[in-house]
Amino acid sequence: AQSVTQLGSHVSVSEGALVLLRCNYSSSVPPYLFWYVQYPNQGLQLLLKYTTGATLVKGINGFEAEFKKSETSFHLTKPSAHMSDAAEYFCAVSVPNSGGYQKVTFGIGTKLQVIP
Amino acid sequence: DAGVIQSPRHEVTEMGQEVTLRCKPISGHDYLFWYRQTMMRGLELLIYFNNNVPIDDSGMPEDRFSAKMPNASFSTLKIQPSEPRDSAVYFCASSFQPRDTQYFGPGTRLTVL
Image 1 (cartoon, helix red, strand yellow):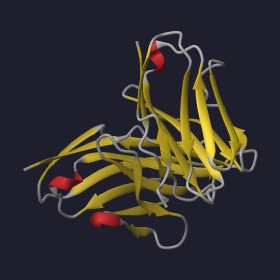
Image 2 (spheres, rainbow over the protein chains, first blue to last red):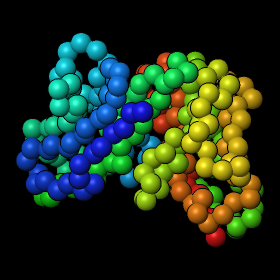
Image 3 (cartoon, each protein chain N blue to C red):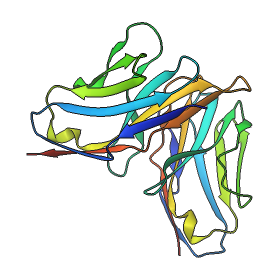
Image 4 (cartoon, chains in turn green, orange):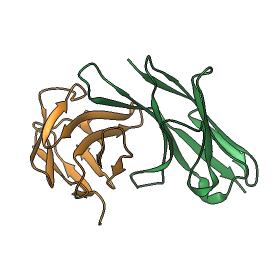
């Protein structure tokens, strides 16, 4: 079975500083990997996703993530934090299950605080 | 497209009452997902449908929970009887393909007193 681990339920950064949100996954087959963002009182929105091909994936709002198979990681980064980046971020993994269908598992989420 | 539509946005009910949450997926999306979000357990997948057929309901917590999808544009999640521990935000999401991006609705915040 697959799993997702997000290190750090709360992360604080200063405005203009690097944002690094960590995600590690476990899967016995090649996974699809996603980062979603949730703003207060809203549903989740896709930031970026990795399916196949290029391991460095660029998403919206200046975020990017790199798939590292050897480290089973898919960390999310942004060079310079903006106040509007304050939100909760979820890493997710999608793999086929035994019945041939897909199973999506979300991480516990990381709340990002941006300090002015 | 209006996106995934959920109703009601907020529901306050008393323990023992029946609660019905509603969802309209994005037109053309063949997959529909129901999630529950709490502070303690995060985002949990309850059940998902493919072409109106339930595929995986292993996340449904107990028999008090049931979900239906009578047609491609409507799904319900019912809790009967409701309990205070069911208080959470319930999200509906839909996607075109199973491994594709999921589009989430705004959620229904359920409070059971």
